[in-house]
Length: 269
Figure 1 (tube, rainbow, N blue to C red):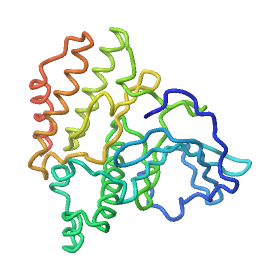
Figure 2: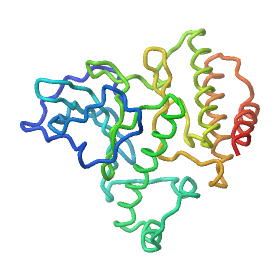
Figure 3: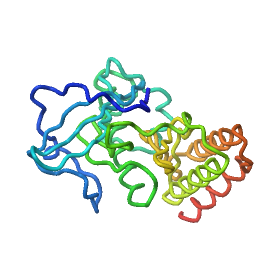
Figure 4: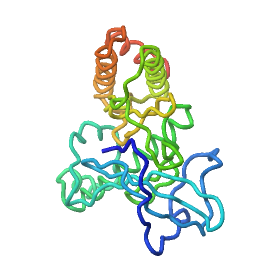
């Protein structure tokens, strides 16, 4: 569960490991100035932010001894024997795998294939976050990718208190209107880039100081390459409109929102 309380800064490892920056694939340019690239930096584990079926998210402090430091979120996909990649077949449509052996292994869910899937999910999310961040979407900055571990911008407070999910919030009427507007604007940015979130709900959005941030994008759907893309986008629209409407906001019918988003996506084509 995503914590909405400050972490107690649990005792880090006696000898924190050095930063893995030198071995990892890096996020897009221009890089935010808070990203620490010094190879002498140490990564200290501070606690678990969220547990899930496919991955856990940990809070990590990356710090240069007597120098700069920052909090980051490390999303680590589970070992193959503990993973439950559900509903992934539809999301994977349109994603290419060159080696036929790898394709067969993933289709048959062998141990090797499930490990490959973990890497593909992490890489897909890293790539999508980079594209969307550059497009101006409200998503965490993807710091680095190493194997099945994705390091992201931590959305929360300096004391380690994670931003709450939208589902945990009790916004006022004015706040609800603003958050819905932010959500639609974010979905428009994705549609213009040719994507649907694919699993958008109040549980996959954070609210930090009034700002809405989309998270959990390993299943992001290409509206062009994936034949089921419009179906996933329609479901995103339904989920969003129903959640806000249930809290008293006069939202448009989800099919109207879907039509507007598809029009933006088609215009891009």
